[in-house]
Length: 418
Image 1 (cartoon, rainbow, N blue to C red):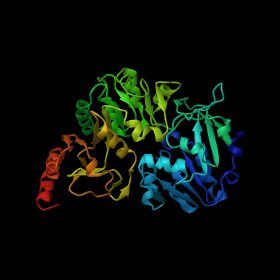
Image 2 (tube, rainbow, N blue to C red):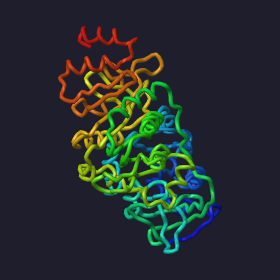
Image 3 (spheres, rainbow, N blue to C red):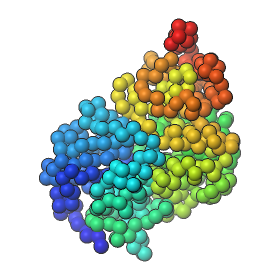
Image 4 (cartoon, one colour):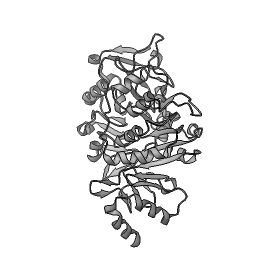
């Protein structure tokens, strides 16, 4: 049975043993008062490890590495500062594999800290803003500590928790972390327009996070009977559900239900998701599972990248020498879309970053997605469908969607052998 403590009486040295590994919800799902308290009390705990997801709060600072070892699957958000300082150990894992490692104990989590919505009349707690890889750790972690935030929305999903699942409960009543929409630029709007023309009514969508996916969703308001099966859900998805573009009526599974793993958005999204059975959160073992996604026809996976080379190799991890992205779930979804009848595996990116071309002869970072998995590459200058093309044919298609200012340089690189 769970023990209830006040935040003032929460002493992590009594709960976490030296050398143990701690995990908490990422991004908006971070149990912020508890994670902040843990960092403040870190010296009393002794050396321990923290496995991070996307960090929107900057709770974890470089100076905390004096006794905390930080591990993450991504360099997103405040993780970049840790990575640049050499204080972050990157786990280059596909999102589906990351969840399996956590659930199986291959990457053992000793203490899980979650944010939940208050218990209902039946004593059930909702995981609120994130289910994803947290759910697999509920049964395997030695200790589960829950922040019961009375402002957290009750979301429907794969499983609820009870007092039997929790060891420590701390009640709070605080505003939720939000993930504000990014600034949509003209290039994003042009890219979104290209993609909108490719998407048929009735398709099932997956999108990544950021301004570009938001722009794509905003361009689909005139579509009908779209479905959603994605890792993250943001305000754009809620808006499409509210305007009638997303109904999920034509999905072959989870008909009538938008499915995701984590909510990343504003108060408007949280209010829409509260007690809404048409939007459900599931575990990563479900959202990123190849057998689950094999059920979808017209599965459209829309993800971004840092750069793409002329043959279709994709770098989604490193920019200008900094680890800012992730292996993540892009390949999980790209392969599902490749195999889906009528599916579209899309990688979208502006053609330039500042004065530099993002269509390159040679990648400046790792190959996150190999050219054998490349599908459609979209920039503001058009669509390069690489499926079924030889290497030399691909190069010509990619040149056509590069920024005109960089095409001559890229052509010269091709002629000189790269």
